[in-house]
Image (cartoon, rainbow, N blue to C red; front, side, top):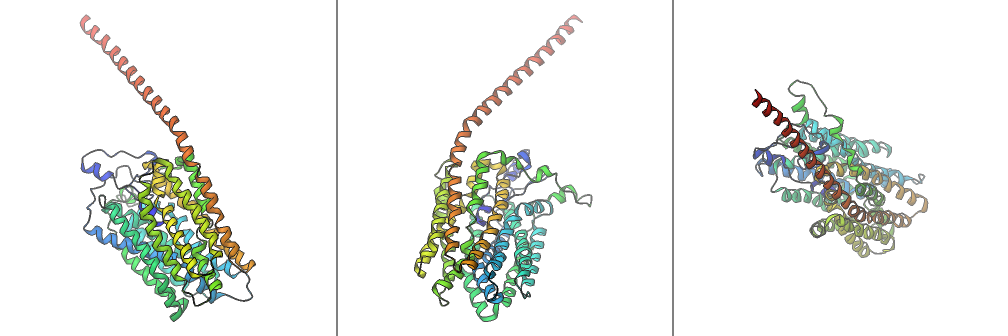
Amino acid sequence: ICSLLLQLPPPREGAQAAAGEPRQENREGCLGGQSALLMAGAPEDQHAAEPPEGGWGWVVMLAAMWCNGAVFGIQNSCGVLFVSMLSEFGSQDDKQMVFKTAWVSSLSMGMIFFCSPVVSVFTDIFGCRIIAIVGAAVGFVGLLLSSFVSTIEPLYFTYGILFACGCSFAYQPSLVILGQYFKKRLGLVNGIVTAGSSLFTVSLPFLLRVLIDSVGLYNTLRVLCILIFVLFLAGFTYKPLISSANDKEGGKKGMLRFPPAKKIFSFSIFKVMGYRIWAFGIPAALFGYFVPYVHLMKHVKERLGENVQEEVLLLCLGITSGVGRLIFGRVADYIPGAKKVYLQVISFFLIGLMSMMIPLCNSLGGLIAVCLFMGLFDGCFICIMAPIAFELVGAQDVSQAIGFLLGLMSIPMIVGPPIAGILRDYLGTYDVAFYLAGVPPIIGGIILSFIPWVHEKKKPKEKKKAVDEETTKKMLENESTSASGTAEKPSKESESNI
């Protein structure tokens, strides 16, 4: 998911300012590509300089790469922590322990996306550096407190909410700041930053297993605090090149002023039928999406025994997800318009099918094959999110479109794993949970398949509307010309009479 947040357009205001052209205010107060994600509500008098394309920007890139890796590396390795939490807090008398423990990981991942629209507003008001530093500090405190709990319930707040919200506030500015330092090299920089997530996702599960076996869960969480502390230091590198809304509007007077509400959130995108279907279909498909990340490790231990290195499955998911993003991102360039949605339809069908295949695999080799295919099409689903948003709502509203979608996605990502956990508690096996986890992606794929038809049907109406507007504009211009000519004629006649 993190890669789709990096695929927004490069900043345009800088080029206009450098060329001496006046900056045009985006429709509905959205900031096009300058923000890289959800920087709604920018001040109207904001002018950006041409990005330096390097220099201190390379330090910022490395800091953003660490942020991407630390945040999503920990989140994607939640299956290892989940097994350890079950062992640490589990009880033979508690028949709902899997359900209770699953809430910790699902809350953590869901809250990162649930906070996205709000974080973007604070980033625009206070600037990237302040929000990133405060977010990392909050995440550090949440993770440190998690290492001192004695029961599972406090982890809902310390790890599932406090730590996750801190990660969200630290993560968003790392995307926004890149657009201030790079334009021509933004694609290269985004690729390097995204690699941070894959690198940590591939290596961290093995490190966590070694740490848990040697020093236990609590000390492992304290070691992870080192990653977040480095993230806290990385926030200081986000030297702003663009003033925040607070600096522009209230800084001179020593008081805080928030932008108007209409410049913070733009709900006009929901008037687009294709986007409404997309914003409903994607969350509908994700009720089973996060289930394998949380429960697959526990399922492998129950099915294949304690001596199996189940971490290799997360390794397969991480590697092929990166490969899928590269391959299908290029394929999508050759598919016109909203028909790119069909790639997501195929991805959801195959992800759902792979989820249903997990209970049928009785060997580690079979599970590796399933995870390879699941990771490949997971990368396909993710990499074309931004291009589809462009096709449905246009470049001016793409930040808002992705922001609202991420907020909606958080709901099924929070709910799905606990439901799978309670099924495991009552049935004694994960089989039914994985079978049911494959159903929502297939349903979501069916819903998304209607988008190209709706989008193409809408085009003739938009074309006719544009023609009518152009005709009306020319008529008004002709009337204005005639009126001015009539006004000049009497004045000339009166001059001659005088």
